[in-house]
Length: 599
Image: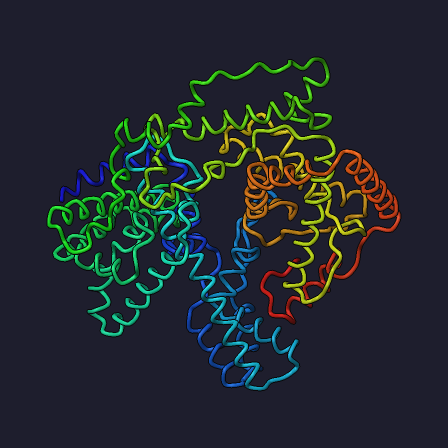
Protein backbone atom coordinates (compact mmCIF):
# COMPACT_ATOMS: atom_id res chain seq x y z
CA UNK A 1 0.00 0.00 0.00
CA UNK A 2 1.30 3.43 -0.98
CA UNK A 3 0.19 5.52 2.01
CA UNK A 4 1.21 8.80 0.37
CA UNK A 5 -0.93 8.10 -2.70
CA UNK A 6 -3.84 6.94 -0.53
CA UNK A 7 -3.79 10.20 1.42
CA UNK A 8 -3.58 12.22 -1.77
CA UNK A 9 -6.76 10.47 -2.98
CA UNK A 10 -8.34 11.17 0.41
CA UNK A 11 -7.62 14.89 0.09
CA UNK A 12 -9.20 14.93 -3.38
CA UNK A 13 -12.32 13.29 -1.96
CA UNK A 14 -12.64 15.92 0.77
CA UNK A 15 -12.20 18.71 -1.76
CA UNK A 16 -14.81 17.24 -4.12
CA UNK A 17 -17.60 16.94 -1.53
CA UNK A 18 -16.35 19.13 1.29
CA UNK A 19 -19.53 20.37 2.97
CA UNK A 20 -21.55 17.18 2.76
CA UNK A 21 -18.61 15.26 4.29
CA UNK A 22 -18.20 17.84 7.08
CA UNK A 23 -21.92 17.65 7.91
CA UNK A 24 -21.81 13.83 7.83
CA UNK A 25 -18.96 13.71 10.36
CA UNK A 26 -20.51 16.41 12.54
CA UNK A 27 -23.78 14.47 12.82
CA UNK A 28 -21.72 11.39 13.65
CA UNK A 29 -20.06 13.29 16.48
CA UNK A 30 -23.41 14.46 17.87
CA UNK A 31 -24.78 10.91 17.82
CA UNK A 32 -21.62 9.65 19.48
CA UNK A 33 -21.28 7.02 16.73
CA UNK A 34 -17.74 8.04 15.70
CA UNK A 35 -15.43 11.04 16.17
CA UNK A 36 -17.08 11.59 19.59
CA UNK A 37 -13.78 13.00 20.90
CA UNK A 38 -14.28 16.00 18.61
CA UNK A 39 -17.24 17.30 20.61
CA UNK A 40 -15.57 16.44 23.90
CA UNK A 41 -12.73 18.77 22.90
CA UNK A 42 -15.00 21.72 22.11
CA UNK A 43 -17.66 21.24 24.82
CA UNK A 44 -17.49 23.62 27.75
CA UNK A 45 -18.94 20.95 29.99
CA UNK A 46 -17.09 17.89 31.18
CA UNK A 47 -18.54 14.79 29.56
CA UNK A 48 -20.07 12.58 32.23
CA UNK A 49 -18.34 9.29 32.91
CA UNK A 50 -19.95 5.93 32.39
CA UNK A 51 -19.34 5.00 36.03
CA UNK A 52 -22.02 7.45 37.22
CA UNK A 53 -24.56 5.85 34.89
CA UNK A 54 -23.61 2.36 36.05
CA UNK A 55 -23.89 3.27 39.73
CA UNK A 56 -27.34 4.83 39.25
CA UNK A 57 -28.59 1.69 37.49
CA UNK A 58 -27.16 -0.51 40.26
CA UNK A 59 -28.83 1.60 42.96
CA UNK A 60 -32.18 1.45 41.17
CA UNK A 61 -32.03 -2.32 40.75
CA UNK A 62 -31.11 -2.70 44.43
CA UNK A 63 -33.97 -0.46 45.53
CA UNK A 64 -31.78 2.43 46.70
CA UNK A 65 -33.93 5.05 44.98
CA UNK A 66 -32.91 7.98 47.21
CA UNK A 67 -29.21 7.29 46.62
CA UNK A 68 -29.74 7.17 42.84
CA UNK A 69 -31.63 10.46 42.86
CA UNK A 70 -29.01 12.07 45.09
CA UNK A 71 -26.22 10.96 42.72
CA UNK A 72 -28.04 12.46 39.76
CA UNK A 73 -28.64 15.80 41.50
CA UNK A 74 -25.04 15.98 42.74
CA UNK A 75 -23.74 15.29 39.26
CA UNK A 76 -25.64 18.12 37.61
CA UNK A 77 -24.87 20.48 40.47
CA UNK A 78 -21.13 19.82 40.23
CA UNK A 79 -20.96 19.88 36.42
CA UNK A 80 -22.54 23.29 35.93
CA UNK A 81 -20.31 25.91 34.26
CA UNK A 82 -20.49 29.55 33.31
CA UNK A 83 -20.92 30.28 29.61
CA UNK A 84 -18.87 32.88 27.78
CA UNK A 85 -20.95 35.87 26.67
CA UNK A 86 -19.76 38.03 23.77
CA UNK A 87 -22.08 41.00 23.10
CA UNK A 88 -25.16 38.91 23.82
CA UNK A 89 -23.90 35.80 21.98
CA UNK A 90 -23.37 32.91 24.38
CA UNK A 91 -20.71 30.32 23.57
CA UNK A 92 -21.50 27.39 25.81
CA UNK A 93 -23.04 23.96 25.88
CA UNK A 94 -24.87 23.31 29.13
CA UNK A 95 -28.48 23.60 27.87
CA UNK A 96 -30.41 22.28 24.90
CA UNK A 97 -31.32 18.96 23.33
CA UNK A 98 -27.75 17.89 22.53
CA UNK A 99 -26.35 18.85 25.93
CA UNK A 100 -29.30 17.20 27.69
CA UNK A 101 -28.90 14.02 25.65
CA UNK A 102 -25.22 13.76 26.55
CA UNK A 103 -25.95 14.33 30.25
CA UNK A 104 -29.00 12.09 30.45
CA UNK A 105 -27.45 9.14 28.64
CA UNK A 106 -23.98 9.16 30.16
CA UNK A 107 -24.91 10.24 33.68
CA UNK A 108 -27.66 7.62 34.01
CA UNK A 109 -30.34 10.22 34.78
CA UNK A 110 -32.46 9.03 31.88
CA UNK A 111 -32.84 5.67 33.66
CA UNK A 112 -33.86 7.45 36.85
CA UNK A 113 -36.42 9.45 34.88
CA UNK A 114 -37.86 6.29 33.31
CA UNK A 115 -38.07 4.55 36.67
CA UNK A 116 -39.80 7.51 38.34
CA UNK A 117 -42.31 7.71 35.49
CA UNK A 118 -43.11 4.00 35.79
CA UNK A 119 -43.27 4.35 39.56
CA UNK A 120 -45.74 7.24 39.23
CA UNK A 121 -48.05 5.26 36.98
CA UNK A 122 -47.76 1.99 38.89
CA UNK A 123 -47.74 3.55 42.37
CA UNK A 124 -45.54 0.74 43.60
CA UNK A 125 -41.93 -0.18 44.37
CA UNK A 126 -42.62 -3.87 43.75
CA UNK A 127 -40.42 -6.20 41.67
CA UNK A 128 -42.86 -5.70 38.82
CA UNK A 129 -41.76 -2.07 38.67
CA UNK A 130 -38.15 -3.21 38.46
CA UNK A 131 -39.15 -5.58 35.66
CA UNK A 132 -40.85 -2.79 33.71
CA UNK A 133 -37.83 -0.59 34.30
CA UNK A 134 -35.52 -3.27 32.94
CA UNK A 135 -37.69 -3.75 29.87
CA UNK A 136 -37.77 0.01 29.24
CA UNK A 137 -34.02 0.18 29.65
CA UNK A 138 -33.58 -2.56 27.07
CA UNK A 139 -35.99 -0.91 24.63
CA UNK A 140 -34.28 2.49 24.90
CA UNK A 141 -30.89 0.90 24.47
CA UNK A 142 -32.08 -0.99 21.41
CA UNK A 143 -33.55 2.20 19.91
CA UNK A 144 -30.26 4.00 20.45
CA UNK A 145 -28.33 1.12 18.92
CA UNK A 146 -30.68 1.01 15.93
CA UNK A 147 -30.33 4.73 15.12
CA UNK A 148 -26.63 5.01 15.87
CA UNK A 149 -25.54 1.85 14.05
CA UNK A 150 -27.63 2.52 10.96
CA UNK A 151 -26.09 5.97 10.73
CA UNK A 152 -22.60 4.46 11.06
CA UNK A 153 -23.36 2.49 7.90
CA UNK A 154 -25.21 5.27 6.07
CA UNK A 155 -22.54 7.94 6.38
CA UNK A 156 -19.83 5.50 5.25
CA UNK A 157 -21.96 4.71 2.22
CA UNK A 158 -22.03 8.44 1.44
CA UNK A 159 -18.23 8.60 1.72
CA UNK A 160 -17.75 5.52 -0.46
CA UNK A 161 -19.96 6.90 -3.23
CA UNK A 162 -18.22 10.26 -3.03
CA UNK A 163 -14.80 8.77 -3.82
CA UNK A 164 -15.63 7.97 -7.46
CA UNK A 165 -18.57 10.20 -8.40
CA UNK A 166 -18.58 13.90 -9.14
CA UNK A 167 -21.95 14.68 -7.57
CA UNK A 168 -23.41 13.59 -4.25
CA UNK A 169 -26.90 14.21 -2.88
CA UNK A 170 -28.04 14.45 0.74
CA UNK A 171 -30.68 11.88 -0.19
CA UNK A 172 -27.94 9.24 -0.17
CA UNK A 173 -28.04 9.31 3.63
CA UNK A 174 -31.35 7.44 3.18
CA UNK A 175 -29.60 4.64 1.27
CA UNK A 176 -30.58 1.93 3.76
CA UNK A 177 -34.19 3.09 3.64
CA UNK A 178 -34.19 3.06 -0.17
CA UNK A 179 -33.03 -0.57 -0.28
CA UNK A 180 -35.30 -1.44 2.67
CA UNK A 181 -32.50 -2.81 4.83
CA UNK A 182 -32.57 -1.41 8.37
CA UNK A 183 -32.49 -4.42 10.72
CA UNK A 184 -29.45 -6.35 9.47
CA UNK A 185 -27.01 -3.39 9.39
CA UNK A 186 -27.89 -2.36 12.97
CA UNK A 187 -27.72 -5.96 14.16
CA UNK A 188 -24.38 -6.57 12.45
CA UNK A 189 -22.71 -3.58 14.07
CA UNK A 190 -24.28 -4.46 17.43
CA UNK A 191 -22.82 -7.98 17.28
CA UNK A 192 -19.46 -6.51 16.24
CA UNK A 193 -19.43 -4.17 19.24
CA UNK A 194 -20.44 -7.05 21.52
CA UNK A 195 -17.54 -9.16 20.21
CA UNK A 196 -15.13 -6.27 20.75
CA UNK A 197 -16.31 -5.83 24.35
CA UNK A 198 -15.85 -9.52 25.09
CA UNK A 199 -12.41 -9.59 23.47
CA UNK A 200 -11.40 -6.45 25.37
CA UNK A 201 -11.58 -8.48 28.58
CA UNK A 202 -8.41 -10.22 27.40
CA UNK A 203 -6.64 -6.81 26.89
CA UNK A 204 -4.40 -7.86 23.99
CA UNK A 205 -7.27 -9.63 22.24
CA UNK A 206 -9.31 -6.42 22.29
CA UNK A 207 -6.61 -4.50 20.42
CA UNK A 208 -6.15 -7.25 17.83
CA UNK A 209 -9.88 -7.69 17.22
CA UNK A 210 -10.35 -3.92 16.87
CA UNK A 211 -8.32 -4.13 13.67
CA UNK A 212 -9.74 -7.51 12.66
CA UNK A 213 -13.25 -6.02 12.64
CA UNK A 214 -12.17 -2.63 11.27
CA UNK A 215 -13.80 -3.18 7.85
CA UNK A 216 -17.22 -4.37 9.08
CA UNK A 217 -19.02 -0.97 8.69
CA UNK A 218 -17.63 -0.58 5.15
CA UNK A 219 -18.63 -4.13 4.20
CA UNK A 220 -22.17 -3.49 5.43
CA UNK A 221 -22.24 -0.12 3.63
CA UNK A 222 -21.52 -1.96 0.38
CA UNK A 223 -23.88 -4.86 1.06
CA UNK A 224 -26.47 -4.15 3.82
CA UNK A 225 -28.04 -7.57 3.26
CA UNK A 226 -25.01 -9.51 4.53
CA UNK A 227 -25.49 -11.48 7.77
CA UNK A 228 -23.62 -10.42 10.93
CA UNK A 229 -21.38 -13.48 11.18
CA UNK A 230 -20.46 -13.39 7.50
CA UNK A 231 -19.62 -9.67 7.66
CA UNK A 232 -17.44 -10.16 10.75
CA UNK A 233 -15.73 -13.25 9.33
CA UNK A 234 -15.15 -11.52 6.03
CA UNK A 235 -13.57 -8.50 7.74
CA UNK A 236 -11.35 -10.78 9.81
CA UNK A 237 -10.09 -12.64 6.74
CA UNK A 238 -9.63 -9.48 4.70
CA UNK A 239 -7.58 -7.90 7.49
CA UNK A 240 -5.40 -10.97 7.91
CA UNK A 241 -1.85 -9.68 7.44
CA UNK A 242 -2.98 -6.03 7.31
CA UNK A 243 -3.66 -5.20 10.98
CA UNK A 244 -0.25 -3.64 11.60
CA UNK A 245 -0.58 -1.76 8.31
CA UNK A 246 -3.92 -0.32 9.47
CA UNK A 247 -2.42 0.64 12.83
CA UNK A 248 0.42 2.51 11.10
CA UNK A 249 -2.10 4.27 8.85
CA UNK A 250 -4.04 5.52 11.87
CA UNK A 251 -0.82 6.50 13.63
CA UNK A 252 0.25 8.55 10.59
CA UNK A 253 -2.49 11.09 11.39
CA UNK A 254 -0.84 12.05 14.70
CA UNK A 255 0.10 15.51 13.37
CA UNK A 256 -3.50 16.27 12.44
CA UNK A 257 -4.68 14.94 15.79
CA UNK A 258 -2.26 17.22 17.62
CA UNK A 259 -3.48 20.23 15.63
CA UNK A 260 -7.03 19.21 16.49
CA UNK A 261 -6.20 19.29 20.19
CA UNK A 262 -4.61 22.73 20.13
CA UNK A 263 -7.53 24.10 18.06
CA UNK A 264 -10.02 22.61 20.60
CA UNK A 265 -11.45 20.26 17.98
CA UNK A 266 -12.33 22.94 15.42
CA UNK A 267 -9.85 21.60 12.85
CA UNK A 268 -11.21 18.08 13.38
CA UNK A 269 -14.71 19.25 12.47
CA UNK A 270 -13.78 21.21 9.37
CA UNK A 271 -11.05 18.99 7.95
CA UNK A 272 -9.39 16.14 9.87
CA UNK A 273 -12.46 13.91 10.42
CA UNK A 274 -13.64 14.03 6.76
CA UNK A 275 -10.03 13.59 5.60
CA UNK A 276 -9.54 10.52 7.79
CA UNK A 277 -12.79 8.94 6.64
CA UNK A 278 -11.92 9.48 2.97
CA UNK A 279 -8.57 7.77 3.56
CA UNK A 280 -10.22 4.86 5.37
CA UNK A 281 -12.65 4.42 2.45
CA UNK A 282 -9.72 4.29 0.05
CA UNK A 283 -7.99 1.82 2.36
CA UNK A 284 -11.09 -0.40 2.38
CA UNK A 285 -11.17 -0.32 -1.41
CA UNK A 286 -7.47 -1.28 -1.47
CA UNK A 287 -7.99 -4.28 0.86
CA UNK A 288 -11.13 -5.24 -1.08
CA UNK A 289 -9.19 -5.40 -4.36
CA UNK A 290 -6.46 -7.54 -2.78
CA UNK A 291 -9.08 -9.87 -1.31
CA UNK A 292 -10.77 -10.21 -4.69
CA UNK A 293 -7.47 -11.31 -6.20
CA UNK A 294 -6.90 -13.82 -3.38
CA UNK A 295 -10.49 -15.07 -3.81
CA UNK A 296 -11.06 -15.38 -0.07
CA UNK A 297 -14.21 -17.08 1.15
CA UNK A 298 -17.49 -15.09 0.66
CA UNK A 299 -15.71 -12.22 -1.10
CA UNK A 300 -18.41 -12.56 -3.79
CA UNK A 301 -20.82 -10.93 -1.32
CA UNK A 302 -19.06 -7.63 -2.01
CA UNK A 303 -20.77 -7.30 -5.38
CA UNK A 304 -21.61 -3.60 -5.71
CA UNK A 305 -19.39 -3.15 -8.76
CA UNK A 306 -20.52 0.37 -9.68
CA UNK A 307 -19.57 1.73 -6.29
CA UNK A 308 -15.98 1.77 -7.57
CA UNK A 309 -16.30 2.30 -11.31
CA UNK A 310 -18.62 3.92 -13.83
CA UNK A 311 -21.30 1.74 -15.44
CA UNK A 312 -21.29 0.98 -19.15
CA UNK A 313 -23.53 3.11 -21.31
CA UNK A 314 -25.62 0.06 -22.35
CA UNK A 315 -26.39 -0.83 -18.73
CA UNK A 316 -27.39 2.78 -17.96
CA UNK A 317 -29.64 3.00 -21.02
CA UNK A 318 -31.37 -0.25 -20.11
CA UNK A 319 -32.10 0.62 -16.48
CA UNK A 320 -33.11 4.23 -17.18
CA UNK A 321 -34.98 3.66 -20.43
CA UNK A 322 -38.17 5.28 -19.08
CA UNK A 323 -36.26 8.46 -18.25
CA UNK A 324 -34.58 8.45 -21.66
CA UNK A 325 -38.02 8.39 -23.30
CA UNK A 326 -39.15 11.39 -21.24
CA UNK A 327 -36.01 13.34 -22.14
CA UNK A 328 -36.65 12.93 -25.86
CA UNK A 329 -40.41 13.57 -25.64
CA UNK A 330 -41.47 17.23 -26.21
CA UNK A 331 -43.60 19.00 -23.59
CA UNK A 332 -47.04 20.37 -24.53
CA UNK A 333 -47.35 24.18 -24.23
CA UNK A 334 -48.94 25.75 -21.15
CA UNK A 335 -51.27 28.73 -21.12
CA UNK A 336 -49.31 31.78 -19.94
CA UNK A 337 -50.48 33.71 -16.91
CA UNK A 338 -50.72 37.50 -16.81
CA UNK A 339 -50.76 40.35 -14.30
CA UNK A 340 -50.99 39.78 -10.56
CA UNK A 341 -51.63 36.05 -10.97
CA UNK A 342 -48.33 35.68 -12.83
CA UNK A 343 -46.48 37.55 -10.05
CA UNK A 344 -47.97 35.35 -7.29
CA UNK A 345 -47.14 32.16 -9.14
CA UNK A 346 -43.60 33.14 -10.15
CA UNK A 347 -42.47 34.52 -6.79
CA UNK A 348 -44.57 32.65 -4.20
CA UNK A 349 -45.91 29.60 -6.04
CA UNK A 350 -49.54 30.42 -5.10
CA UNK A 351 -52.56 29.82 -7.33
CA UNK A 352 -56.23 30.62 -6.59
CA UNK A 353 -57.36 26.99 -6.93
CA UNK A 354 -56.32 23.61 -8.29
CA UNK A 355 -57.83 23.49 -11.79
CA UNK A 356 -57.15 21.66 -15.06
CA UNK A 357 -54.31 24.02 -15.94
CA UNK A 358 -52.66 23.26 -12.62
CA UNK A 359 -53.05 19.52 -13.20
CA UNK A 360 -51.22 19.89 -16.52
CA UNK A 361 -48.55 22.03 -14.87
CA UNK A 362 -48.04 19.42 -12.13
CA UNK A 363 -47.67 16.65 -14.69
CA UNK A 364 -45.02 18.63 -16.53
CA UNK A 365 -43.13 19.61 -13.37
CA UNK A 366 -43.21 16.03 -12.15
CA UNK A 367 -41.74 14.99 -15.47
CA UNK A 368 -39.01 17.65 -15.27
CA UNK A 369 -38.22 16.62 -11.69
CA UNK A 370 -37.93 12.96 -12.67
CA UNK A 371 -35.56 13.85 -15.51
CA UNK A 372 -33.52 16.07 -13.19
CA UNK A 373 -33.40 13.39 -10.49
CA UNK A 374 -31.99 10.75 -12.83
CA UNK A 375 -30.13 12.85 -15.40
CA UNK A 376 -26.94 12.84 -13.32
CA UNK A 377 -27.12 9.03 -13.11
CA UNK A 378 -27.55 8.82 -16.89
CA UNK A 379 -24.60 11.16 -17.36
CA UNK A 380 -22.56 9.04 -14.89
CA UNK A 381 -22.11 11.91 -12.42
CA UNK A 382 -23.73 10.09 -9.49
CA UNK A 383 -23.99 6.49 -8.35
CA UNK A 384 -26.70 4.74 -10.45
CA UNK A 385 -28.90 3.37 -7.65
CA UNK A 386 -31.00 1.33 -10.09
CA UNK A 387 -27.88 -0.76 -10.77
CA UNK A 388 -27.48 -1.62 -7.10
CA UNK A 389 -27.77 -5.42 -6.55
CA UNK A 390 -30.46 -4.81 -3.91
CA UNK A 391 -32.63 -2.60 -6.15
CA UNK A 392 -36.03 -4.22 -6.63
CA UNK A 393 -37.16 -4.34 -10.25
CA UNK A 394 -40.83 -4.60 -9.29
CA UNK A 395 -40.71 -1.45 -7.15
CA UNK A 396 -42.85 1.37 -8.46
CA UNK A 397 -40.61 3.92 -10.10
CA UNK A 398 -43.06 6.66 -9.18
CA UNK A 399 -41.97 6.24 -5.54
CA UNK A 400 -38.34 6.95 -6.32
CA UNK A 401 -38.83 10.69 -5.85
CA UNK A 402 -41.37 13.09 -4.36
CA UNK A 403 -42.93 15.79 -6.51
CA UNK A 404 -42.10 19.01 -4.61
CA UNK A 405 -41.94 21.48 -7.52
CA UNK A 406 -45.57 22.47 -7.40
CA UNK A 407 -47.95 25.39 -6.86
CA UNK A 408 -50.14 25.57 -3.77
CA UNK A 409 -53.74 26.79 -3.73
CA UNK A 410 -54.95 29.39 -1.21
CA UNK A 411 -57.14 26.85 0.62
CA UNK A 412 -54.24 24.42 0.81
CA UNK A 413 -51.99 27.12 2.30
CA UNK A 414 -54.60 28.02 4.96
CA UNK A 415 -55.22 24.40 5.94
CA UNK A 416 -51.47 23.76 6.01
CA UNK A 417 -50.94 26.76 8.32
CA UNK A 418 -53.43 25.47 10.89
CA UNK A 419 -52.23 21.86 10.58
CA UNK A 420 -48.59 22.77 11.22
CA UNK A 421 -49.53 25.23 13.98
CA UNK A 422 -51.42 22.43 15.72
CA UNK A 423 -48.52 19.97 15.23
CA UNK A 424 -46.17 22.60 16.70
CA UNK A 425 -48.45 23.01 19.70
CA UNK A 426 -48.55 19.23 20.24
CA UNK A 427 -44.74 19.09 20.04
CA UNK A 428 -44.26 21.91 22.56
CA UNK A 429 -46.83 20.52 25.00
CA UNK A 430 -45.36 17.01 24.88
CA UNK A 431 -41.79 18.28 25.19
CA UNK A 432 -42.78 20.48 28.13
CA UNK A 433 -44.50 17.54 29.82
CA UNK A 434 -41.41 15.35 29.41
CA UNK A 435 -39.22 18.15 30.79
CA UNK A 436 -41.32 19.34 33.72
CA UNK A 437 -43.88 16.60 34.33
CA UNK A 438 -46.88 18.94 34.01
CA UNK A 439 -49.30 19.86 31.22
CA UNK A 440 -48.75 23.42 29.97
CA UNK A 441 -50.75 25.15 27.23
CA UNK A 442 -47.78 26.55 25.34
CA UNK A 443 -47.78 29.84 23.45
CA UNK A 444 -49.25 33.32 23.86
CA UNK A 445 -52.66 32.18 22.52
CA UNK A 446 -55.20 30.00 24.31
CA UNK A 447 -56.17 27.75 21.41
CA UNK A 448 -54.39 24.51 20.41
CA UNK A 449 -52.05 26.18 17.95
CA UNK A 450 -48.65 27.86 17.87
CA UNK A 451 -48.70 30.31 14.94
CA UNK A 452 -44.90 30.59 14.85
CA UNK A 453 -44.72 27.00 13.57
CA UNK A 454 -47.42 27.49 10.96
CA UNK A 455 -46.29 30.93 9.83
CA UNK A 456 -42.63 29.88 9.80
CA UNK A 457 -43.44 26.87 7.67
CA UNK A 458 -45.57 28.86 5.24
CA UNK A 459 -42.95 31.62 5.00
CA UNK A 460 -40.29 29.04 4.13
CA UNK A 461 -42.62 27.48 1.60
CA UNK A 462 -43.56 30.77 -0.10
CA UNK A 463 -40.69 33.23 0.37
CA UNK A 464 -38.09 30.62 -0.54
CA UNK A 465 -40.03 29.33 -3.52
CA UNK A 466 -37.26 30.43 -5.92
CA UNK A 467 -34.66 28.32 -4.07
CA UNK A 468 -36.67 25.10 -4.06
CA UNK A 469 -34.62 23.59 -6.87
CA UNK A 470 -31.38 24.04 -4.86
CA UNK A 471 -31.62 22.17 -1.52
CA UNK A 472 -28.40 23.54 0.02
CA UNK A 473 -29.38 27.15 -0.73
CA UNK A 474 -32.89 26.37 0.57
CA UNK A 475 -31.41 25.08 3.83
CA UNK A 476 -29.18 28.12 4.38
CA UNK A 477 -32.05 30.49 3.54
CA UNK A 478 -34.38 28.62 5.91
CA UNK A 479 -31.81 28.91 8.69
CA UNK A 480 -31.55 32.68 8.21
CA UNK A 481 -35.30 33.20 7.77
CA UNK A 482 -36.18 31.16 10.89
CA UNK A 483 -33.63 33.13 12.91
CA UNK A 484 -35.10 36.42 11.72
CA UNK A 485 -38.70 35.37 12.44
CA UNK A 486 -38.00 33.85 15.86
CA UNK A 487 -35.77 36.66 17.08
CA UNK A 488 -38.12 39.51 16.14
CA UNK A 489 -41.19 37.55 17.30
CA UNK A 490 -39.56 37.19 20.72
CA UNK A 491 -38.56 40.86 20.73
CA UNK A 492 -42.06 41.96 19.74
CA UNK A 493 -43.70 39.86 22.48
CA UNK A 494 -41.28 41.22 25.09
CA UNK A 495 -41.91 44.83 24.07
CA UNK A 496 -45.68 44.46 23.99
CA UNK A 497 -46.02 42.39 27.20
CA UNK A 498 -43.79 44.25 29.67
CA UNK A 499 -40.70 42.16 29.03
CA UNK A 500 -42.36 38.78 29.58
CA UNK A 501 -40.76 35.87 27.69
CA UNK A 502 -42.49 32.84 26.21
CA UNK A 503 -39.14 31.13 25.48
CA UNK A 504 -35.61 31.69 26.68
CA UNK A 505 -32.48 30.03 25.24
CA UNK A 506 -30.09 31.36 27.86
CA UNK A 507 -27.45 28.69 28.44
CA UNK A 508 -27.94 27.08 25.02
CA UNK A 509 -25.01 26.72 22.64
CA UNK A 510 -24.49 29.92 20.58
CA UNK A 511 -27.62 31.78 21.69
CA UNK A 512 -28.23 35.47 21.01
CA UNK A 513 -29.79 37.34 23.95
CA UNK A 514 -31.74 34.18 24.79
CA UNK A 515 -34.08 34.78 21.83
CA UNK A 516 -32.51 32.43 19.29
CA UNK A 517 -29.83 29.72 19.43
CA UNK A 518 -27.85 27.71 16.91
CA UNK A 519 -29.40 24.41 18.00
CA UNK A 520 -32.96 25.65 17.59
CA UNK A 521 -32.28 27.26 14.23
CA UNK A 522 -30.63 24.09 12.94
CA UNK A 523 -33.67 22.08 13.99
CA UNK A 524 -35.99 24.64 12.38
CA UNK A 525 -33.92 24.63 9.18
CA UNK A 526 -33.98 20.83 8.98
CA UNK A 527 -37.71 20.98 9.70
CA UNK A 528 -38.13 23.55 6.93
CA UNK A 529 -36.36 21.25 4.48
CA UNK A 530 -38.62 18.39 5.54
CA UNK A 531 -41.68 20.61 5.01
CA UNK A 532 -40.62 21.82 1.55
CA UNK A 533 -39.53 18.46 0.16
CA UNK A 534 -41.76 16.00 2.00
CA UNK A 535 -44.48 17.20 4.40
CA UNK A 536 -46.01 20.03 2.33
CA UNK A 537 -46.36 17.93 -0.85
CA UNK A 538 -47.96 15.09 1.12
CA UNK A 539 -50.35 17.45 2.93
CA UNK A 540 -51.20 19.17 -0.33
CA UNK A 541 -52.05 15.81 -1.90
CA UNK A 542 -54.48 15.18 0.95
CA UNK A 543 -56.03 18.69 0.86
CA UNK A 544 -56.60 18.48 -2.88
CA UNK A 545 -58.99 15.60 -2.26
CA UNK A 546 -61.28 17.95 -0.30
CA UNK A 547 -63.86 19.54 -2.54
CA UNK A 548 -63.65 23.31 -2.86
CA UNK A 549 -67.24 23.67 -1.58
CA UNK A 550 -66.18 22.02 1.68
CA UNK A 551 -62.66 23.47 1.91
CA UNK A 552 -63.78 27.12 1.80
CA UNK A 553 -66.21 26.93 4.81
CA UNK A 554 -63.57 25.00 6.82
CA UNK A 555 -60.98 27.69 6.12
CA UNK A 556 -63.39 30.50 7.03
CA UNK A 557 -64.34 28.80 10.32
CA UNK A 558 -60.69 28.26 11.29
CA UNK A 559 -59.78 31.88 10.47
CA UNK A 560 -62.69 33.21 12.58
CA UNK A 561 -61.72 31.05 15.57
CA UNK A 562 -58.10 32.11 15.23
CA UNK A 563 -59.05 35.80 14.99
CA UNK A 564 -61.22 35.51 18.11
CA UNK A 565 -58.32 33.87 19.97
CA UNK A 566 -55.98 36.66 18.85
CA UNK A 567 -58.32 39.38 20.15
CA UNK A 568 -59.05 37.55 23.42
CA UNK A 569 -55.35 36.76 24.04
CA UNK A 570 -54.36 40.37 23.37
CA UNK A 571 -56.42 41.32 26.42
CA UNK A 572 -55.77 38.13 28.42
CA UNK A 573 -52.42 36.65 27.31
CA UNK A 574 -51.65 33.02 28.07
CA UNK A 575 -49.17 33.34 30.95
CA UNK A 576 -48.30 31.49 34.12
CA UNK A 577 -46.36 28.55 35.41
CA UNK A 578 -44.04 26.96 32.89
CA UNK A 579 -45.00 29.49 30.20
CA UNK A 580 -43.65 32.82 31.37
CA UNK A 581 -42.88 31.95 34.99
CA UNK A 582 -39.39 30.54 34.55
CA UNK A 583 -38.51 30.29 38.23
CA UNK A 584 -41.39 27.89 38.85
CA UNK A 585 -40.42 25.96 35.72
CA UNK A 586 -36.87 25.72 37.01
CA UNK A 587 -38.03 24.33 40.36
CA UNK A 588 -40.18 21.73 38.67
CA UNK A 589 -37.27 20.81 36.44
CA UNK A 590 -34.96 20.30 39.39
CA UNK A 591 -37.49 18.09 41.14
CA UNK A 592 -37.73 15.85 38.08
CA UNK A 593 -33.90 15.76 37.66
CA UNK A 594 -34.17 17.40 34.26
CA UNK A 595 -30.88 19.07 33.21
CA UNK A 596 -32.43 21.32 30.60
CA UNK A 597 -33.68 24.10 32.90
CA UNK A 598 -35.18 27.20 31.36
CA UNK A 599 -33.66 30.26 32.98
